Length: 289
Image 1 (cartoon, rainbow, N blue to C red):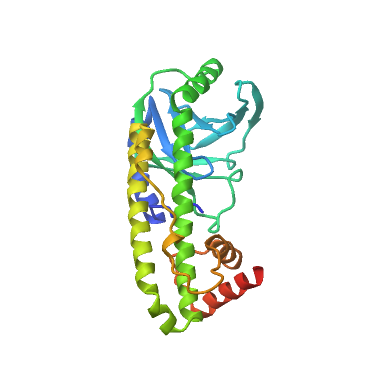
Image 2 (image 1 turned 30 degrees about the horizontal axis):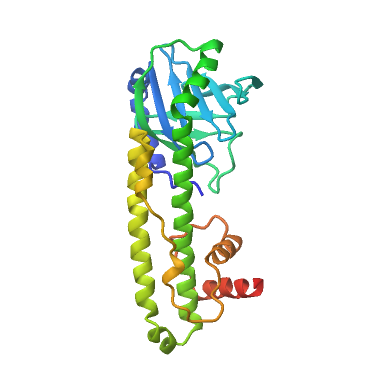
């Protein structure tokens, strides 16, 4: 699920007055951008003529390149792992549009996945800015793809893998919460008190949230430093190992999350569940065993 956009429509309108200054600032820049999720870390090069070239390095070693102007893409290219051109397509104005600010880049367009709120753009955080003095041409694009894979390819892949670990751990924490809420409704309070159920749950959540906080801080640091050794300092221990065996068959955390997503696709997990919704999930899970 794409993260909530950090600026409001009012903020976007308010920033319109800054467009001339941002255009001037963006000349001869290389922006390293994190997000949206389907692109991950990607690179925007803006030359002195304000020609924009975006490089998206993929885990299968193919590269998507978008070439355009300050408002969006005019051409889409795809290169294979040997930097052979697989596709070159001219784009309509509404295929891929962007707004570039000093801290964030907004994306929208018909070639992007549909969002739950159609008018809301996708976004990426500008994590690093470098000076860029080259002129963009076909030869430069090919050499730049090779350079980016040599310099950033492994780092970007490590970042994406670590982001997946954080997401999976957050999923597990949410699954534990679903299990806790369902068990509180299904089991007698005397049984739960006998195994210190609330205490176990709070300990697991506190430990898990602390690990997530440390992991997200490490991710933020590595996006800037590119030192992936920092990731090795973060350990993701199993969250379920300390759960008390209060029933013979404990619904698996992954199954609870899967069932929640089936019943409430796209729902913000911060929205509290009603008792009826919790029971609906638990009953559906029990039928799957």
